Each structure stands twice: as structure tokens, then as C-alpha cells.
Length: 205
Image 1 (cartoon, rainbow, N blue to C red):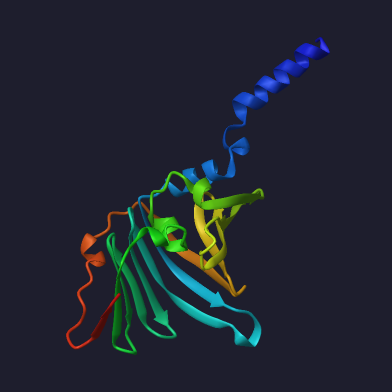
Image 2: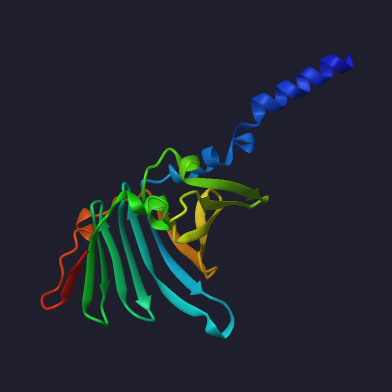
């Protein structure tokens, strides 16, 4: 076969078989995030390293758009709950609730990234990807100068989120591992309609 024809066939094979392999990082990440309308998982979290490291465990439930229930069971019980318009942080040990409006300011935060439906990730983040034979890893750097997060790393295995790593502006690292992940299971919406317990202080912001 003529070398020029062989080269042309090779190029065509690449073009028609490559698929997501050559997709831009924000396109392939968007595809992965759009695979689920709901997300349930257990999580284990470590903030910091060495003897100063802090550990936490709990459960996360997400229902798009912008509804989530993040329960920290240890060491100190607390909840982060959003019904799509209001965000509550209930610190059980302190018997205190902070209530605020869910706004566009959280668009580049980790929970909003997972629970939202933003088709323009490349406008919010600079995205780089590193893939192995078993995992896909995306590192997102917020473009907003006022962001409290320096970077967010999402790692997927078999197209399912298994790890999230956060670095804040003080270079403090929080590493979150997800397990027992369930996608696209119907979620009872009452889970996100939080009603403050009687006698608990509510601070509205």
C-alpha cells in the first residue's frame, strides 16, 4: 500500500475511533458529571497531614440541581443541607444552625460542582487531566480571584467518583474518599427540606 494512503487510513482511524480520548478536559469531565442525577455515598475525610491531621466520616446524598445532604457523623456531628435555594449548617454539639441563601458565589465550590448542572466548567476553572488505565483524574483551578479554594481534584474509577482532594488558599489539604457509591437512585426530596429542631439557635446570614 502506498505510504500516503496508509497514512491517510491511519489518520481516519484515529479520528473515528478516538472518542473521549482526545476530548478537551472540560468536555470529558462534564460528561462524567452528567452521568448521574443523584449520588449517594459514604465518605472518609482527612484534613492536614501527620500528627496534626483531622479525620471525619459520614454520608453524602446529592440530587441535582443543587440539592445535597452532607452528614458528618464523627468526630463532631453536623449537617450541610441545601434544598436548592437555602443552605443550612447544623452543628449538633453546639446546638446552632447557620442559615444562608444558596447563591452564585458557591458556583466554584466542590459541592456545587457535584450537585449543579453547569455546562460551562471551562469558564469557572482551568482544568487539567491525568489518566491511567484504571482512573481518570481532573485538577480544577478556580479562575475567580476571590475563591477560597486553590484547587479541586476529582478522581474517577470506572466512570464513578471515588476521591476528591481540596487545597485551600492557605495550602491546607483535605482528602475525601468515597465508598459504597450509588448513582441515579430515586431520592426522597423531604431529605433536603430541613426544619430546625425546637430550641436550637438559628443564625440567618
